[in-house]
Amino acid sequence: MIYSNALRGPSDVAGWVAEGPVQFGTYDGGPGFADDDTVALVLSGAKDAEEHGDHAHWTLWCPEEIPDHVRITWEFLPLEEPGLAMVFFAARGHGGEDLFSASLAPRTGFYPQYHSGDMDALHISYFRHKYASERAFRTCNLRKSAGFELVAQGADPLPPTEDANGFYQMEVIKDGPKVAFAINNLPLFDWTDPSPGPLGGGYFGIRQMAPLKAAYRNLHISHL
Image (tube, rainbow, N blue to C red):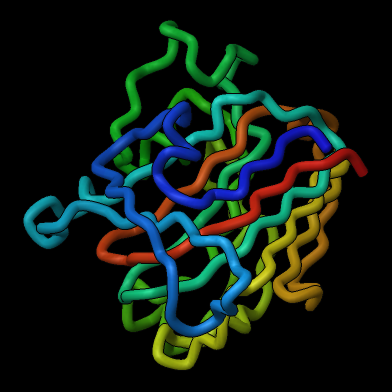
């Protein structure tokens, strides 16, 4: 195990790096919870999302740098939509700098700073329920940045919030040029980077588009 966090509530991410108007809460009941379950971390965006527009969204970074060749798993439960959930991984400065280097431009949660700025990363968007077009044809997307290149896509099995039946197990495999994504052990895509210089290790982060409210628990990052 490289990193493990039960994500029981806001105190478990007190050392994480928040960029944008992320709101923290705790979920301790409802669908998917048994008497012996731990509570879960709730994350949401700006309360007045319409007023903030594209600046209502946020990114929350785990502060520990993660090596390459890892399995990343976490549990996810959508609580209120519309919105979109995403994870970043293998994130570093575009020139190889540490993601939190003062030489990089400040980031405030505004999406173009992450996909076309001075950082490199892979990012998977899932539960893409923000816009009507996304809800009408639901996919999980893998993009490589800087450059916002769509490199892989698969169907998204996650239902609307009213049909969600407990927490869903998410899994990312990052193994050199290979990236695979699965939900509840259902493979959704498996991509191999054809470029001579695939992204290696870096930072892991969680992102949401407001006004999505979702619960997370049991983040584990381990060597393959």
